[in-house]
Length: 160
Image (cartoon, rainbow, N blue to C red; front, side, top):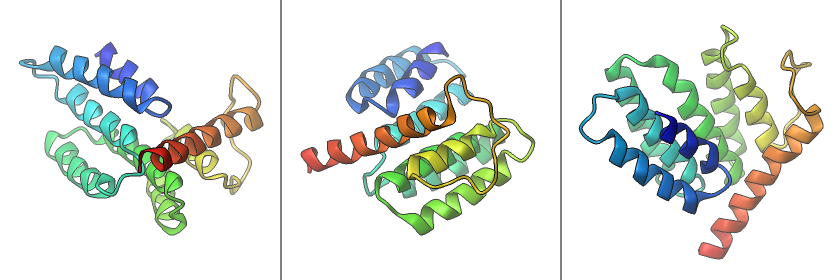
């Protein structure tokens, strides 16, 4: 379980390390009935692959798997991964739709910071003052997420 969380943590900044962490996570999950962690690991793969053409189709498929497993809380992780993907590709309309879905999925307040993060990744202003209290000032957090998007864009540029 913690291995999947480690892979999640590094997936935004270091796709190569995320590959290694995911491989270990899948090895540890092999043979176990850990549907939630397996689906979260698949979400980590989306983040790791953000910017690549297959991500939206993989996200749709993953949403279906999440529904079938009866684990709706995982939808917001997929939407965050999708937001990252759209921010990396500068797909503003798709990003706006993703933020809307993310807002609906976090209306209870659980993981509400995902909506702020999606705005930060895209360099968009928040529509209203945020209720989220960050450990750093908001501008620092915003800049950090935006740097992750720029780093992924550079990574894809040098790969392609």
